[in-house]
Image (cartoon, rainbow, N blue to C red; front, side):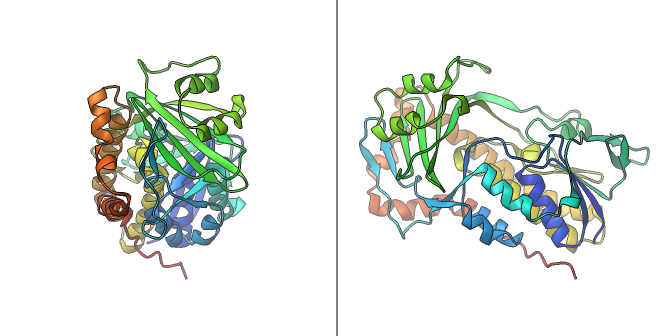
Length: 383
């Protein structure tokens, strides 16, 4: 089926949804509350399942051109510099590293400007017939479909599901930055209660992320970069080189939260998508990837359905179990990676200590297959 759709939110998930729906014949309007389209953040990595979703949306080639292949999940070391796992190029697929703004631009360029509206504060409202409408800029939009892709603190979710759980802080916090520096290999450095990711980006840049536990939500520092330097004072030199090449005012510091199980991702003519439905810790590099998968599955399900209700029901059946499983897995991985308990730290590093690097690719492939092995449905372009 085809119809009219309003997408609330112009981030990666919202734009991907708009692309998928337009590709299958829908008339789509994207409403973004910010004054201009753009992506706030630093770096991100995309795994094979995300790249297949981008291919299904028809933007795989420009997306790959905007990223840099790297190995970090199989280049692991301790904070004292000792190597636990060395990369095995050709035996494990690389991740693709992006600056968030670069991937966002690829998606934005695939949508005509006439379908995009900025400065539009969208409010979802329930009609008397059980359908939902969107009010923005003083206009009521009575679309066949409303896609709520307005992020972890989604107002749409709160309106449509008043009893839905709020995002929950589990104790982890993360600093992120982009350094202007060349020739840094991707790596994951593990320390007691912390980890540090280095990820190369195109055009002579490196994304870094440093995560650990916080005593409570909302703790901030007058000089966030100095706080990171203090915590990694004895860590390897390439970490300090990246920090030295980072402008202090650009460092981001966020507490991490995720969403516990929602009873449904759909109600009436509204579908939650991306972080609005399944916000997760970044420790499996699946936040944006699952948003991209959502977009493909939503468009495919509606194309195959005879009405909105059955199409959205198919989307909910396909997406809710998978994404909620990954939310739990990412949370568990995040909490294990930042455990302040010494025994927990030793347990976390046990497998990398015991498994030879030559055997790591096969072990990683088996562990990641349920996530990375996802295959997208075909999105047949509209005639």
